[in-house]
Image (tube, rainbow, N blue to C red; front, side):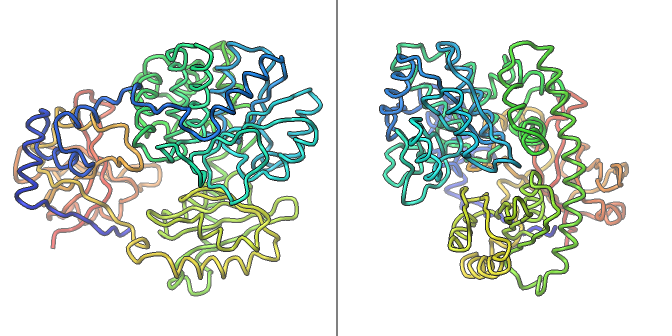
Length: 572
């Protein structure tokens, strides 16, 4: 991929202020710019940013309907009603269900959980799920990470005498379901200060309010923060505001005292002897939880997350790991097929979006394939397959473009849809696919900006290799956890050279393991450039080139750093 490199050096006055702030905080001068870029101007603000406190969490009763939700939950417990915790089959939904179920189960026994089957029931609240609730005597359903559009289903449940409390974070329609309470910070009448909570985050706020109303100490909730961190990383919500607090303390929990289920996944991933980061969740832990719902049933993931016996958890984690291996094979095959289909799209070079349909594709993997296409072609992508006579699929977006609004612009063609800025799901009659593709492309072409259609790297600072020390890396870690709204910093070093020992590696010889030097120091810097083996020939000529990279700890040599190189550009 050819990246556009964006870097704007600060003016002399701003640079001086950034360096002075860095001096006050005791960090490298280049990191002062990172603080300024995040709106931080004083030493007190910097120290506050580096050490988020749980006391900063908002009062949960600021969320609309929270008091009503707590009152209804307390009433259900007082009446000894059966309660069902219901959630989506993805990571956010499974962690949300596990969190609420685990917490309430400590105080109330007449409770169960339910995850719909992706293939038999589809996304969200299903009639089958409500019928199960009715047959098992459920009086109250707490639904997490879905439900905000389930108008007909919740009306059906109400006709059977079942009440709903919705905990969701997806964009609602103008009409809301007839639930007893709707906890969703994206409601148009919302008064809650933070609109970017994950579905699990909304569930956590509900439990925070429930605990406060019943005199339960807040520290009884902190053991569940590891689930919040997993949901925040996996659902790609902004890691700022309240999410930064939850993710920061959730990661500490994940590293010091994870729940038995997550500990088993950590073991299976081979991550047991290292400090876990948001990237470990995104690329290792999250996909395994997701694989359960993609390949079998998400209920297995919840069973693992609430498991109390470590040996039993290891067995469950092993099964889910096998699902993930099968998912990876399917993902590779479908992505290759999708790329071939994209190449045949008429007028591909002039299109601003991608919409493809193949009725043979596996429903559980189309979201991943849409993400792959977005990464490869840097355009909003919709991938559709056939399920129960309808076309169903996933949409993914590029940075800064609201794909939910693009899907919404075609709502008269759709059976249903839902999602948020960067990801959406949709179902439509097969005969509408061609018209949807045309209309979706027209909307994207009219609304997307030119700069949103080219892959770019926003460079935070230009460094020499003498700056890139382990001490620098330790200071950089204070900015974590990273994610949307607090992206992992990207650095640039100019005019670097192969030390003479760089080589192509990988099963398909697709990566480069680099050993580099620059003219400013004697440091030999280790790096890895994934998928960039095409640059190897130039690197071996001993000519100078520029690199953009993030800084990681060398997992093979503790106390040393290595560069994860995003892009290589020959010097002009």
